[in-house]
Image (cartoon, rainbow, N blue to C red; front, top):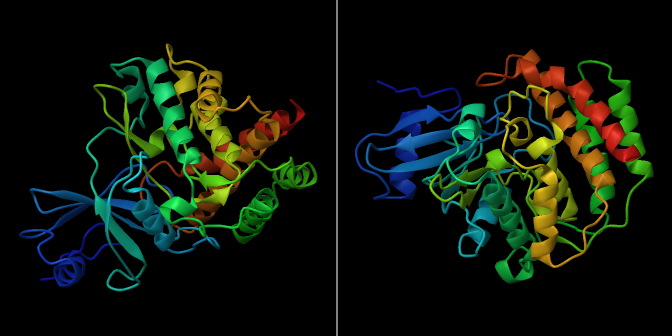
Amino acid sequence: MTRNGPPGIEIDALETFLRAHRPGMFDGRLAVTLISGGRSNLTYLVTDGRRKWVLRRPPLGHVLETAHDMSREYRVLEALADTDVPVPRPRVIAGPEPLGAPFYVMDFTEGTVLRERGDLDDFGTSPRDLAHNLADTLARLHLLDPAAVGLGELGRPQGFLERQVRRWQRQLLASHSRDLPELSALGERLARELPIQQPPAIVHGDYRLDNVMVDPASGRIVGVLDWEMATLGDPLTDVASMALWWDGIRGLNSPVAAVPGDVPGFPDSDVLIERYFERVGREPADLSWYLGFAYYKIAAIFEGIHYRSQQGLTVGAGFEGLGVMVPALVERGHAALVA
């Protein structure tokens, strides 16, 4: 009898593939469950009852251009596995067969993802130390020599910011389900007001607290996750993303993840930004444009998820709240550019 797993997974087909391509990787039968929180690529826990792995695959249905690139994620994890940037070690990549889409399997990292408000309320170590550790890890990533770790051809740094704005403009058009003139206007402002680009670095593309795993005893970052948008580009885009998700969406009741800025005792994002520049050995830079772009990018991503949700092609809960957030994100994006 065929055992179907959660949406997007056929367990017997996965078992057969892994036995053929990674013999000895597991014993017995596999169990697969959807890991909550994945609203872009789908993320699953795979176990044989003794060991655990994580499987990543694209979402079901409508997929945005250039998004959800499994081979890119896998390549980055391979390159960083032996650096001082902590990442899960990848094991195998395949697709579209046997699951009907590209996917990869990586080791499971023991730690905690601080995603829910209760996770932050109950966090047992210093919130300031956590903020410093988050900034330190990003600084270590940006200080890596891309060529030295095999990622010298990961992207095209020249013209990165201009291409990023165009990319999210295109993806908004591809996910159009309602008219949002202020969102379009924000993209046009960003295109007109491009800053001088910073020296290139390996950019995570979605760096934030709930995309890392934390050792709850020490607050140390033990794994950086979700590398689907990694590339070579302007590192200040990551700094702005980190700051926005820390307290830039304060008060918006985000269903994606708890916001440290909403929790008493957690420092403002200024602490992360100051620590980051201290660690990379640079004077603090003006982040106004980068924050405006961060709001624009998240608004575009949420519109894409809203589009898929309208079609019934999302897996998991909480999607209905993302579309509601878009107008407020756009308003804050315009305000950041004025600052």
